[in-house]
Image (cartoon, rainbow over all chains, first blue to last red):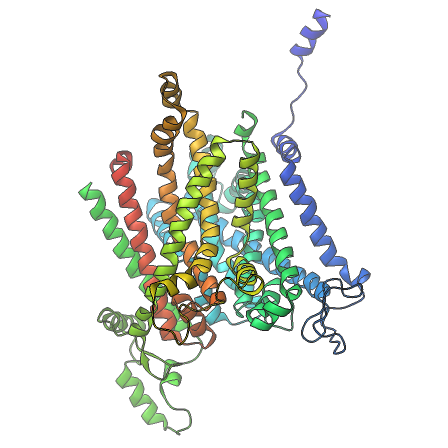
Length: 297
Length: 319
């Protein structure tokens, strides 16, 4: 009995790698897993709705105007008889598309900006960080309004505006990580062997920033959905007839729709909040999962 | 302390200058020539007259020269004229909207701070009990719901279904001005605006207080036989408040964003509503003046928070 345990302790099994441990921590976090399930469901439903739902988002039916939820129109219909469920699903596609694409663009800008600031000398770093400070000083919505007034409405301008607004936070976090990284021996060694900036960024930078990037990506998708909805709500984002959660809420700015036809704005609103909530839960779960100290608590 | 304040003020001034450059560049990035907005398109105008007009307005000068001319005019209070409102000077127009916005935001912040800190304390003391779980779920919902949606829901609940409060505006039309009337119009939008910030303050207060409660000096206080109420109020909450103060300063930007949506939903005659109408009608001089004013006030508030923080925590000013 005792010999067995001694033998076992002398040849320990190789412990799980950091990614495996992070995954295990993530999947034992109930809110995060619930968020993941809800998010996947919403993505799946909005991607597949043309196959299981009889109405399409822009079908006008003048015999079914402003009808409440019923067996045919589960979420009712809007002012020109378009099906609210179909529009909500299509709106989900638009919102997710805008949020995901703008997330990638702003992640690219933020990573490069932060990495260059972190790896360069004090002058470049100082200037870069003052730019970030400035970009973070202006209230985001104000910046959003000014940019939107220049860029105009539509999917591409909206993506552009959201991307241009969102990178500074990431740049700051990446910079802090790179300041720490460049003193580490393996980076010093790589530099000594003549590694260029691309090699340093791809080989050493990205793997060591992966926790920051993954968490940022998740939370940024939620933020992007909110920003798109806000812009479209004000009539500056996605222009009708294209459906988005924001411009469906925009309909409620008319008192008549707000009072008499609440299903036209409440359903997209509820789906919006559920998605954002679910994605935020995933993001928080990922942050805890990547934090090596969280096992100690 | 004085050195710290002076250096912070200088940084703030530089930020303001950089902001004005940014605003100016954005002003010039706007589609169309500024001259198009100036001339009357129905009257034909010759190329020479156009060139002469450009020269008179200084539009033939290089951009940096134009910038300093614009800055000089802006500093003396001349931000140009509103195109949309038929040549009303911009600055008085924007300034007339500051009051309502400040009133709305100040009330909302007051509600957010009081409710957020109180809820945070309750949540931390009752950690993992029903009250904590309930408040945490509420705060998560509050952080995740955008202001325009809470605004719409609040408007629907209080003005449409319950009919307790008016559906918008700041005063009842046709009635003489009274403070009570303003308060009656103010309470719903201000409460709704406070939700996001209050939820954030609550979450910070909760985690900050939980951390403080595990400190040795709290254990010492308890061991001395200090009553639990005084341990919380005098020893723990005071120290837990520090990070919350910085948070309050740094959420001002977000609160301004929320105020824009709330003003739009409730037709509150403030900066946000002005800004939205200016953006939809491309009234650039109004947009730029409002942006600069908002940016300047955010910089000022951040400066004040930094100074307040340094006054409370001596470690900051020596760093």
